[in-house]
Image (cartoon, rainbow, N blue to C red):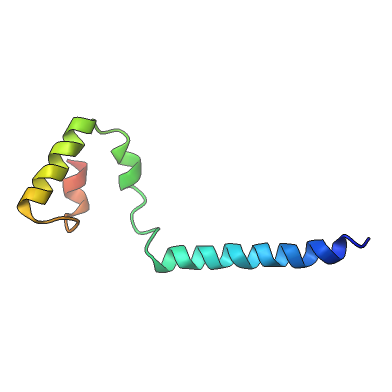
Length: 71
């Protein structure tokens, strides 16, 4: 019965940690693009390298659109 005095505060602490982590992820735009990472797995590595090097050479960096990534 004494263990309940430890488990209830511990569970509340873990719950508050999980809620904080969720809101931190939302605030830092972790859920903005859910489709592109799944599509990246299907692409050939050579194509990805060529596209990244062409973007860097063009100076666009991370400002490319999601449509360019899917081509």
